[in-house]
Image 1 (cartoon, rainbow, N blue to C red):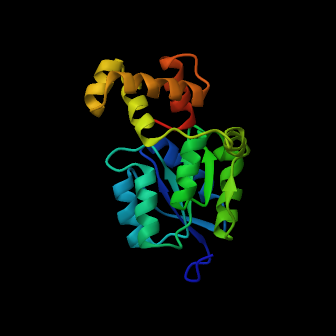
Image 2: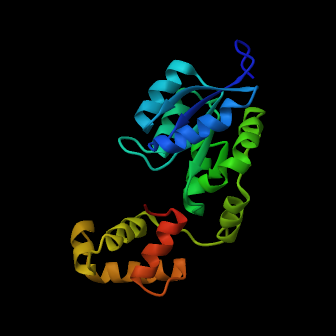
Length: 209
């Protein structure tokens, strides 16, 4: 706990006021915790972290202006000892791994907050890393899969937006045959039936948003 207050000082970051209110309600009844600030986007989170230096930050990923991953990376660059727990709706293994590589100490699904949030805050504050069981399962399930290349990810984003192979080729500056080859690779790596199925799987796993 912080020497000056005797509490675990917490910053919450989420663009949904109701979720922030729910977290505030959970923390309010805990004698060893204090909510010091709330941010509605990643840019605001960076500013508030610099100002308050919280012990634990609860960070949403999908937000306007600056998303949670960019905010996480920025905060960790400025404050390498920052302890940040990612809160998200989807367990997607690719998204989890990016967050952990960026320095996240914990990763929780929003659906499990009432059950797991308080223990996770205490665990992370004590220097441990914590993942929801559902998140751990999702990561393990895909641990041996060959990842998509950066070019394949860019192509898949365009496909998910409804672009044809010809449109994808034009936007990436490659031939249509090259795009077809990338699509075959994408389907194989994701175990997808077709382009639409590939886009759905990639969004579920956090490969694209």
